[in-house]
Structure formats: C-alpha cells, structure tokens
Image (cartoon, rainbow, N blue to C red):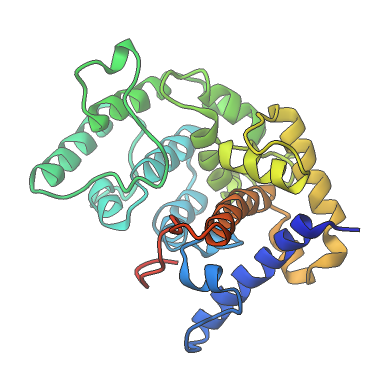
Length: 296
C-alpha cells in the first residue's frame, strides 16, 4: 500500500502525461487538474516526447541507425548533440554535406570553428539543459566550447567498438576527464535507441541516477532528501519501483518505463514538484519556471 508521498508520485506521472496529451490534442489550458503541473515546466514522462529529443532522433539518431556507422560515430555525435542540446546550434554543428560529424580531429576542429563563429555573431551555443562546466588543470583559460571540443578529441582515442553493451560504453566514457555520470547517462540513453544497441542485454536495465533522481528516490522512500544514494542501490530501487507500480498505471505508461531512464527522470521531476509544493504550502515564491509555450 502506498503512503501519501508515493501516491503523489503516481499522481504526478498521470497528471504530467495528461497535460502532454491534452496539449497535443489542442485542448484549452489548463491541461490537467494539478495547478503546479499545469503552470510550471516539467520534463515529459517519456523523454522521447521532448522537443529536442525528437529533433535529435530525426536528424542524428535515425541517420546513425540507417547507415553502417561504428560505435565511435554514434558516441561522438550523441555526445555533441547533448552537449549543445539546442536545435539552432545543432543545425550549425551538423556538417552540411556529411550530415554527421566524422570521428576525426579535423572534423571536430571544423565543428569548433563553425560554432565559434556562431557564438561570435552573438548567438548562445549552450542551452544549459545539462550542467557542463570547464574544470581542472586542463580547463584553465579555455572556453566551454574549446574545452569540450578537446574532450571529444580525447574520446576519439578510445576503442568504442569493443563495447558490447550500454554499461561498457558508460564505463569507457567515464575514463575521459570532463565527463561525469549524469551527462554520461544522458548520452547512453540516446544510444539505446540506435539499431547498433537495440539488442544490448542491458537495454531495459541500465540507468545511472543523477542528484535529482536520488532526491526523488529519497522522498519516495521517506529518507533524508539530501542523503546520497549509492549508484547500484539507486538503480536497484528504480527497477524495483518499476515492477511494483505496474498495476497502478495504465499499460501505455508502464511501457514507457521499459526504458528505465524515463522512470529515473520522473523521480527527478517529482523532486522538483515536491519542492514547489513545499514552497506553496509555506507561502513562498515557487522557483520552478513557469510554462511559456516555447517548449514541452
């Protein structure tokens, strides 16, 4: 039997998905009964429904799946796509002739020059969806663009084709200075939708929980919100919750959680929702951004 917090988690999933469906149908606002979800920005229950993910699927992932590309092509292009994570910048990033970035230092340097010129014209080249910063001795004096272009060059030297599953890709990514577990997990989540990984044995089980997901899990299980959750424990809890809630959600939504990163993201967004609820109850200003109609 669910406690009140756990029931709110289930309700959050249902209300967020209801809002997406009603918006897609052209229904007038509010798109759901919960005023916080109706008025504030939360990621979709299914990451595949997010606008940038749909764009990446169309212009990058589909082409990688259609062609005879090695794992190095896949990892480099998805890494760059999630680094910029903004449609106008991704259009500048993509080579007009080859469509995808060739996994060579020359191709990456050409990309760097295109984006540098784009930024010099007054355009923002990092959307900020993921927390990427310059750090360490290697980052001194470098712009974010220069730093992560160099990170991508370091990735070229690794033997990606030796990776047989998603976990091996993730572990290899983490050997590169400048890539952390959260960003790595986002890249690997995209990779699972390529034909090259459709039969990976850990397709439905690989997930690494970021800080927001850990806080959401702590709320769900009644622990101190700030308590760090060991990676293996967080993964095990996500997979166990997925099993336990199957009878509480419609089959269509349960199928979304076949990709465990979707459930992980829901815990992250639920943490945001609970913070907003606490702020509302305390009479404080809700700090979650309001929905403006410019994105999902």
